[in-house]
Image (cartoon, rainbow, N blue to C red):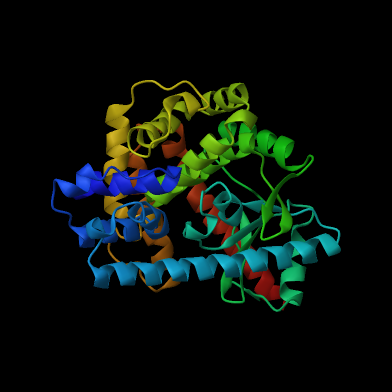
Amino acid sequence: MSLNQFFELLRSGLWEKPADISLFEEKETNWQTIYELAKRQALLGVVFDGIETLPSELRPPRPLYMQWCARVAQIETANEHLNELTGELFAEYKKAGLSPVLLKGQGVATYYPNPKHRQCGDIDIYVGKKQYEQAKQIMEALGAVPEDEEYVKHAGFEYKNVEIEVHRIAAMLFNPAANRKLNRFIEKWLSGQPYLVMIEGNSIPAPAPTFNAVYLFIHAFNHFLNSGIGLRQLCDWARLIKTGFNEIDRAEVTMLLSSMKLLKAAGAFAYIATTYLGLDSHDVPFPIKSNKEDGEKLLADILIVGNFGQYDTRVIPRPKSYWGGKWHTFARAAKRCREFAQYAPTEAFWYPFILIRDSSAGQWELLNKKLKR
């Protein structure tokens, strides 16, 4: 029953509707289990919003309730800090003549009823290949500390206790033919007139809803193949689909997902969003077929591995040695690609090869940096 209660509270927080109190009146509620579920899925703030719709006598015991309040306050503070940094960084980039675009994160939070209750992480800024080197120089001039290794898609920095990723590539697919289609889609949507969102009074360029309907799915699916995802990634996607319904070009989304051979995988995501998260099936911007088997398998994995696979107890800890860590990542991803190839066979086939290619490219770039010092 805890799982049903958890999803009822999650739907309540996602869509600003009162939770069904009969689920809590008629059955015993294991609040500790619900708390742990919300924590593993990075949804403590959203589920808490659902709890707040319950009568006081049906809420968690006071010690756990106060602990939950404290965690939500921490999430709010973290969001306020990231919002402030986002405004600061975009102001610096614009002053330098760059055209940054905010990916995911604080932009996606604006889709939520209570943006500060979406659990946040880092700040992802897309600048493209032409402005990439200048964008990195600006970060270092601000005092940001670069990561030792630079990745194919982005460079990472630590700035004011927050991880900042500066992207030259917004997203990738592993099937080369599909990736070429994705690149054209990215060029079309991220190089034109910016779509603006308001974050703490600042007007910030972010992807348009049509772009995000594809991008948020691809980003989550890539992580799913690599190490796993949590429900928060599906909540982000569901909130975007609902709030951006009138602005999403359904025909373009359908055409692109179909041409990239990702409709089946997207259908599994849509199954969870409509069956468990409360999204109306009519809001999904592509035709969906019955995907119960695929959707339930996906959900089972999500509940086991938690947010970005951090809670998967089946996986041995990543070795501390560099190459040992690389092999661990590759072996884990290759195993998951075999296990979940049914969702997107061509992506699962190509993923291990591209992982090796990109890791080698990253090492070559790191070596060149050392030689230039």
